[in-house]
Image 1 (cartoon, rainbow, N blue to C red):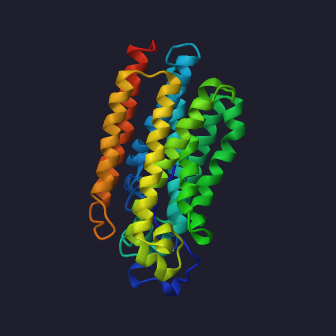
Image 2: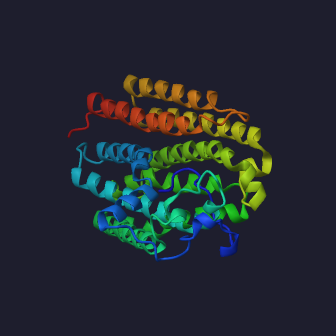
Image 3: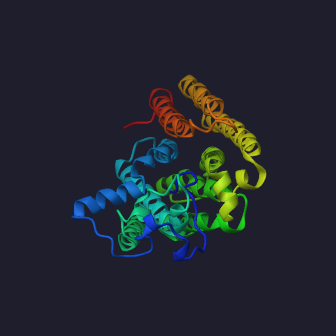
Length: 327
């Protein structure tokens, strides 16, 4: 699934591109070998950022397993992992392809692989297609409902890169895309929408969490966005408004986490994890201000990575120790 706000795509002609982006939009760029091409593609899609979405998919799946038999189904977890990584890889590759020309005009993103030619457009499209097939295959192996709903899950992944063309709130589309993960993981385990309310609650929390951070992340490009006509909350309403909106989103996120924990019946271990999450949320809002965005990446990698992992670990301990989930 797409990571927060990686800049954008508009209809830009080849003459608008700087000289350094000679390879943009061509399929002639070649890496010395297949291994290097694969490594470059993995950098392109930031494969390591899967850590942000996977913990909540696992959490939703494990809660569903606790309800549906009380035992961990390792095969389902493996297929969920494959599906999540496949969907996210497809989304990131498509996003980078559609954004490559506008990335070339943004100093912050001008060194990305499709701009410099480290990855060719053909390679990126091939990787995206393979990832999409992997996602659909994993959905098919899980159950018929997952396969039937898989195309719907792909829709926000494709729409998100275009959202910045027609709405000042593309962050909301990203939130919807991220919310799909926990819901899909629940359905992967149960095969039915019946009783899936906890997954929808967790999905909403995850969507608001990532969407809220996307508002922060987008502040880095507010001036460039205005100059080239890209839509975003910071570009339209200003950085201060975007940061306030992000705070509201994260307050609601935290409230939804509380609701989810109470609904499932989590105990003191979950609440410790949630307290640590509150600290991480507070940290990312303290270190970023409208006049100082130098620590945005620190907030992204440190705070958000910690949120997903910490909350999952404490929830897993609670599921095993208190709620009787069996390996």
